[in-house]
Image (tube, rainbow, N blue to C red):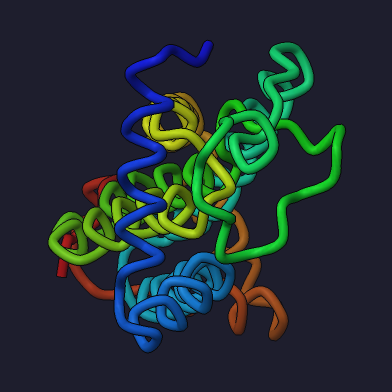
Length: 213
């Protein structure tokens, strides 16, 4: 998958990383690992808010982490098929990676982190369109950080974003209707646990889609 161009871009980015202030390096090292937790928090917040809304909104909020998990699984399958070595070992003359280079067998293409970030950004935007203004930049920064710290090629993260986002969108489209029906069923049961999980919903017609609020 790699080419001389992507290797050159990788060298440029890692050289820039080594010349960056130490605090910038620290922020990149933290974000590249813990940034995914921010998406996890957004999943929980989205679900909690959707408990007070119609079943369509709840369905999309519940689907968001599922769609993200499927996006990750697809990227993991591709990684096992391609078997591309990490640039921190393969690119001759490149600056040392800021983070320890993953062990041999933990392949480079595509980036799982970028796939998860791309899938989460799209899934959250489907549930609440207004969140796209910060979920999309978050995903892009996650992808860039993987190259910045030296553990992925640029094409690894670009394809990871594309795969994750595309899979998440497809899963959301295919499963939104049955998930909406399930959400209605759970709410109608009126069991205490079901009410806590799904909430009581909001008044007004169930339009079957997120409110974007």
